[in-house]
Length: 329
Image (cartoon, rainbow, N blue to C red; front, side, top):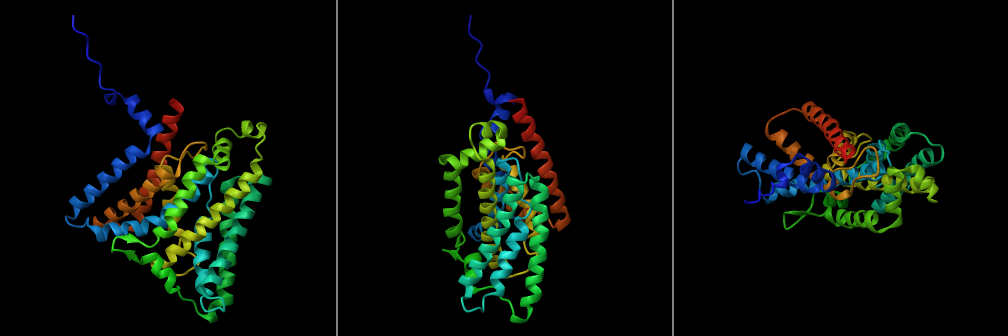
């Protein structure tokens, strides 16, 4: 009697669920390639080195903002103040471009202000146990209000995006690789290695997975959360500077439209909104997917409200899918 050949494991639903749970970056890369193929079919000839450069330039600041969400989501939190902090950083730098210290002074002031906002977020979440959603949402309004006060004080001095930021945001090497990668690549490596190889990264996962066990093991969660939200705010400020240079615009609400896509990129990348699961690698691919998807919607002539509805639906559907898959495991 001949033995029955074993069935292909990839024909089973549980195999695909395991892949989605343990290696989400693999199906995400496949989805990214599929979207590129679709946009090429929708507009033949659009996919070329120049198009790839545009996609990369738009993806870099979005990936940094999504990285803020990834890090905070790992602890079971979220940071809704990143858009306000990013807008503030770009605007403050632009208003100080004519100061004695020039661009360096503007960037330094913006980073200090961002760190202060992150410090307050961390104290509120880590020390006073305010829910991260409430704390960061409230901080976003505080930052926006202070930025408006700053705008009224500095309106007569004139504001302009520094040429160095414009070069960093829009310039390319060999017409393909954006200069913004000079900032993004070291930051990416720092986050990836930090999450995998450092005690701080392991503490983020531990606090999100089981905060009680983390506390009993001796982890001081409040210190970790303070450092986390300061890092998130500084990353948001860096993203704001890049977006200011990319758009050649400085305003107190410049980055507001990027908040929802940043959350969506983190969720698509496999970061659990419940904490304890995820990584920055998947988030980067998620940012690329959303940028290509935005380009596809533009090619199809769909309006901005449609994009917002689609991103909201993506967050709900993907979060529900990941929650179910991880729960069944």
